[in-house]
Structure formats: C-alpha cells, structure tokens
Image 1 (cartoon, rainbow over the protein chains, first blue to last red):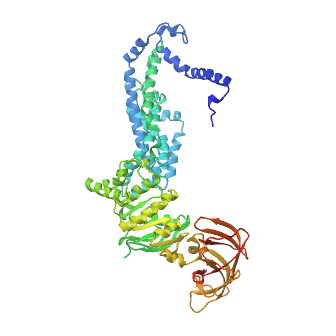
Image 2: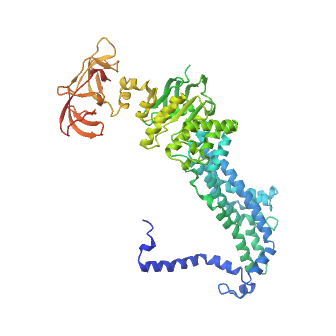
Amino acid sequence: MFPKPIEKSSRTWQLGYQALLPTVMLLWLAPLLAVALFSIRPDSDFLVGNYWGWPSSFEMTKNYGMVFGSAMPRYIMNSFLITIPTVIGAVALSCMTGFALGVYKFRGNLLIFFMFIAGNFVPFQILMVPVRDLTLDIGLYNTKTGLVLFHIAFQTGFCTLFMRNFIKALPHELIEAARVEGIAEWRIFWFVVLPLMKPAIAALSVLIFTFIWNDYFWAIVLTQGENAQPVTAGITSFNAQFRAMYHLMSAGSIVAALPPVLMFFLMQKHFIAGLTLGSVK
Amino acid sequence: MAQVELQGVNKAFGKTEVIRNVGLEIEKGEFVVFVGPSGCGKSTLLRLIAGLETLTSGDICIADKTVTDLPPSKRGIAMVFQSYALYPHMTVYNNMAFSLDLQGVPKKEIRERVEAAAKILQMETLLDRRPAALSGGQRQRVAIGRAIVRNPDVFLFDEPLSNLDAALRHDTRVEIARLHAQLGATTIYVTHDQVEAMTLADKIVVLKAGEVMQVGAPMDLFNKPANEFVAGFLGSPTMNFFHGTLTGKPETPEQGRFSGGGIETGDVRLVSTEKSIGDSVKLGIRPQHLILDDKGPLEGTVSLVEHLGTDTIIELMAADNTLFRFVTADAINVTVGDVVRFGFDPEKVHIF
C-alpha cells in the first residue's frame, strides 16, 4: 500500500513526523496568521515595530468597526456586483460554446477550440494599455460594466476549454438517444446535457469566483474610486500619502478573503463528479 | 412494400468504404439480425437506418416513406444502445416519459403508456429509481421500455446484450424473443454473437467488410451457407475445411466431386459453382457432422481433448497437417496421440 500508513513506521520516525507536521503547518500559515494578528492590533504596534510579538492591546471590535465604517462595504458590494455577473456570464457562455465544440462536428471546430485555448496563453499584462484605451473609447472606463465585460471575455477562453472537455467526456450515446427520440437540439442541451454538467458548473463557478474576486491587476487598470473599484483595490485606500494603516488593511483583507472561502464550502457538495454514474454500463 | 427497404446503400468515412452497395428488404413484424465480425459495418448499417449517420449514396425507406434525408426523430424508429444511454439524472419513469412529455402528449396518456411498458417488462416497482440504482439487466430493460413507449414502426437494437454477464445475457435474450412475439414489431438487431443471431432471428443478414454475404432464415444459413465465410462464421466450433481439387462436375449445376487429403467424395453440394474441374477447392464439414468410422476416409491424430460436460470437442491433425475438430455428445475415450478415423454424411458437406 502506498503511501505507507504512519502506524507501520518506526517510533522515531513517528515522533519526528508528529513534530514536523505542526512546524511545517505553522510556517505555511505564518503570513496568514500575521495578517490575522495585525487585524486585531492597535495602530501603535506597527509604529513601534511590534510585528510578531504579543499585541499590546486587543482592538478587534475597534479595527473591524472602522473597516465597516469606512468605504469598505461599498467596495465589497462592488466586488459582488463585478464577480457574480462575471461568473454567470462566463459560465453560461462557456456551457454553450463547450456544447457546440464538444458535440457538433463541423469544419473549423478544432481551429476555433484552439483559438479559445490560445487566448489563455497571451500574458494579460501586454493587454493593459490597449484594453484600457478600448474601455475609455467606448465609455466604459471606471465602470463595473466595463470590468465585467472584460472579465467575461477573458475568462470564457479557459471556461470553454474546461466545459468542452467535460462535455466531450459525457457519453455521446446519450445525445444520440435523445436525437432518436426526437428531442430538439436546444432541449438536448437544456434537459440532458446541462443537468449532467452540474459538477462542472459548480467547480468552474467557484474557480472563476475566486479568480475574479481576487483580481487586483484589472481592478486598478480599469477602475478608480469607490463607485466602481472592487475590494482588492479598495483596501489600498487605507494607505494615504503619508500614512499606512496596516491594522485596517489587515482587517479589510480578512473580510475580503471570506467570500471565496465561504463560496468553496457552500459549493463543496456539488463537486462530486459521480453524477453520470449509471448512465452507461 | 417492405417495412424497411435499403436500396444500394453506400457509406464511406473519408476514403474508407464501410458499407458497400447493400440492398435489403425487411417485412413488417420480422426480426432481422445483422451479424458479422467486429468492423464489418453492422453497427454503421444500423446507424444509417437510424439516421445517426448520413448515406454516401443509396436510399432507405421505412414504412413506405423515403427517409434518406430525414432526421432520426422523423423516421418512426426507436433505438436501444449497447451502453443503454439512460438519462442518469432522471428516474426510470421520466426516462421513459421524457420524449413523450416534450412532444406534448397528455400527462394521463404518458402515464398509461409508461405503465403499460413497465408491466410488459416487469419493472413496475422500479419506476421511481434512478439508473444508478439499477443492475445492468434492469437498465437494459429500461432502455427497451423507453423504446416501447414511443410505439415506433421499427425497433433498432445495437448489441444490447454485450454489457451483460453470461447468465443475464441468456435471460434477456429470452425476454427479447418473448417481447418480439408479444409486440410483433419489426426489429433490427445487431450482434457479433452467432448464438443470439441463430436464436432470435427470423432472418439473418451476415455482413463482412461492409458487404452482405448472405441473407436468410437461420437454419438455411446454417445448412446451406452461400460461401466459405458464412459457413465458417456460423456454427460452433467453426466448420472444418480440407484442401483439395474439384474432380468432377455432373449435370446438376450445384453438385461436385472433391478429392484431397485422402478424402474422395461422390457428388456433393458445390457452393462455388464457378470453379471448374481441376481447380483447387475446399471441402467444408461441420465438427458435428463427422462420424466415427474405422474405415472412414479421414484420419487424424488427436492433439487436444476438451470435455464440456454435455459435449466433447476433440482437436485433431490430419495427415496433410490440416487442423480439424470433431464434436460429439457421446462418451468417447480418446487421449492425445490416438489416431482416429472418420466418415461423414455426404448430404452435409459443402465444396467451396
């Protein structure tokens, strides 16, 4: 059996393992712990350089209160208003492109598919200036709509790759059986294929939600100010020209990190890919 | 006019010809089995009839209607797939009701038709289950049920039993035969299993490399194979072939005399009538049709003895190093290395 169960190894190795595991874990989590700890420190701890020591006082309610009293709720709202439409748009579009590319044989099928994939290999930094100019020209600069549209366009490539391969792996006989039964193509998509794609849709939604929620680059390239900026960019507003409020930035970061984590746990049960079991064989 | 008619059907994938000039008539209520080795095009032919593949040339008519250019749904067919292709997210009831529901059949009628089909297939208790909670045999029955509720002109079966284990395969085969007797529906059934073909079919179509080798009732094919391929394909163990020459052709065109490997025949059935005297031919004798005979013309050295319980299969080597088999249901006491002599019934041998 591999890996070898720890109970079967020697006593020294067991002890070493038990000592090493928490150490590695601590090392791993240190940055997160530091941020969490900073979020409950008073402002003065930063100024005196007390980064890793015991907080001089616990200011949890005060810090988090200030975060929620600032423009942060507005930024978080913006994040939701950007992320959710993007997830819906990108996943819906890619379900359709994936179905078309995965089910139908037509000239240029592979070529189109490769174009979707090739888009993923373009380093997005080189698009910074043209995309910013484009959004400015069509009047979408510094709007949530602009950010949403850009994100959908950019994420659909990867989503199509994901969905097309998932649909391709579904038993083709299911679609043929439905065709023989006289089910119209769009109904095959809606009633046969889409229900079977639930695990893929759930997985992709969480993935895209996290991508977009955590996006910082396009947030600062395409938006400014609290009317459109998402939380990732909004956190930096605690940094003024002469003063950085790291305790509030930390508290803001913790708050901003929660939705993707929650999203993951909520959608966890949908990840079971065993839905197609029993269809064939 | 026939229920299903194929006229000069051709199908090529790129440059590979898969179906070559197939013409076929299937009467209403007939159970037709397409049989052949894998890759012979039997499934493709079925998919052409179903409309899942498009013809390269030719015409297909179903129920007096040319369907060549119609989509599968307009052809009045129902198909049962090898992999069952049940909708995994729907219950058994919904699997069967799905297409009727989308066609706008009234709910009450749907319920009646599904329940009737469930009754025929003895699966009334399974209607609320999902396919994942069913055994292979049950899934197969759901797939058949889904075909029945649509009340089609023609049933198409694509190797429906090949995913089942041996015992279940037998039971389901019997059930399909019973079902056909009960419904009397025109059925086209694809299999590579000659036992299924022999037991189920009213008419067998033997295919090889996309061409029809022979069409006929099972026993006609078995007793009067039209060529060496059909002779070798049907029957188990396969027919024995002995090399020799054609030594005589009497007045009757389908008779001939054979000589070779120590065997001399009188006038027996000549299949390849185009051969002339002196041509090299093969003599075909089924293992079941050899007769133990100490004075018989055929001599063989036993190389393998297989006791199957009911039958015993003996593999022998003839003097000219031709391998042949002998099958008998009688108790026989031979061991490897023994020399045995055989005769045969001249009525049951063929010259190819």
